[in-house]
Length: 178
Image (tube, rainbow, N blue to C red; front, side, top):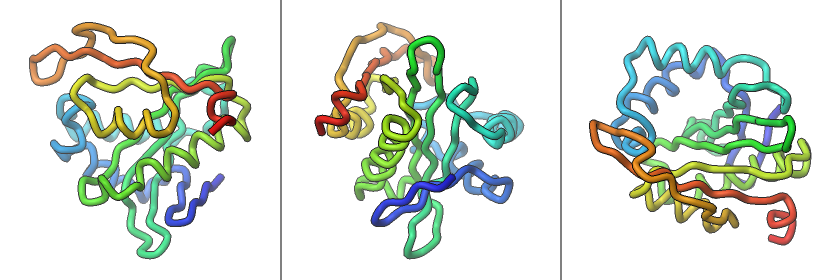
């Protein structure tokens, strides 16, 4: 499986992508609103789990490497974790190398993933969770048509501080109307 946009190729994570995956997960700017810093062993376990073959019925993440078509450089990862039964839903997520943030790559890659999820896989709804304070991710998801559905107060802890989780959703019919 490979998804393509005007500037990007999105392809399943491969063993050779380990150095880039590790780099993202050890970058404090990337992880600021995602998770406290993982050990290398924890990152490796996450990476190996994401190498598994994916289907919409699987209960693990589809993880796609985002690559710049012109340079061939990896710029981030994106993906979704399906909860196919019983309601045909998935949660979307993404991590971008800081040097590529703010250039429209997040929106472009997420749009390709949403098209795949809704049009190819037949999902009914895609969800997203954003840690309160992560305004760039919230703005990106809002531009893609996601609607804020709720706030879970003090739901997540980063560096010993409690943060709210913002829950967003996008229905297939809303995506098609875009």
